Structures are given as structure tokens and as C-alpha cells.
Amino acid sequence: MKPESFLCAGIHELDEIAAQILDHFPNEKVFAISGSMGAGKTTFIQALCRKLLVTDTVTSPTFSLVNEYRTSCNNPVFHFDLYRLRKPEELLDIGYEEYFYSGNYCFIEWPENAGNLIPEGCLYINITVDELTKARYFNVTK
Image (cartoon, rainbow, N blue to C red; front, side):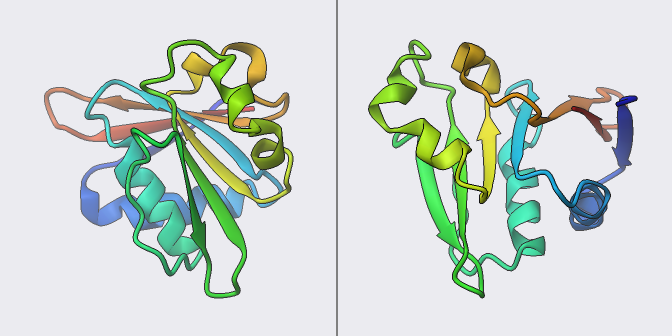
């Protein structure tokens, strides 16, 4: 797949970017979302969850590694924050396979800390920030 890029000029456009990505990749359920500290990974996941009609409060699972949310149809959505993961094997302790291969949406922050445990075929989204304009680029590859 040729990489695609979505430009977000400001936070007011974030829900539209989330909708475009979900619409553009309707069969993808596992999203590996990377970017520098403060790039907006959690804020973007909040926008994705709004578009999926998540009814729970979406916050970063920095210390628990994973949060489970529910949509208005009671479907689970999983949100991982692997920033504090010391080694990929720690994912084995929480049964990551049950989440990653469940067929439900999984949004993974800091996927680079998971080593080779990220599922093949996952959608990779790298958020970069234009330091001058503060615009975000969502660079998507499969």
C-alpha cells in the first residue's frame, strides 16, 4: 500500500481526520499509533472513539497498559499505551493476543515498544508535528 497522509491544521479538524481514516480503512481493526511525546496520540484516539460512538471516558492507560471501552452498541474497543513497557514480553502477562486478535478495534500507542508482537497487517499511523504551524500530519501505512 502506498503511504497516505492526512493533514490536520488544528484540533477542530481532528474528528474529521478520524472519520476519514476509519472510512478509508473500514476493514482495519488494529491501529499502531506512533509519534513523539505530545504529538497527540491520545487525543487522536479520543477522536477515533467518538467516531466509533464509544460511551466511556477515553483516557490514556499509561499505568494499566490497556483500557477497555464500550460503544453505544456495547462493542469493546481496546486502547493500549505501551510507553512504560520495559520489554515486549510483558504483553504476554496481560494476554495481548486476546485483544489484538479479537476482531475488535485496538488502538496502540507506542507500538515500537512491543517489538514483533504487533499483528502483521496492522495499520500504522505516525503523527508528525510541523513545529512552525503546529499542524499534524497523520501518515498511514499498512
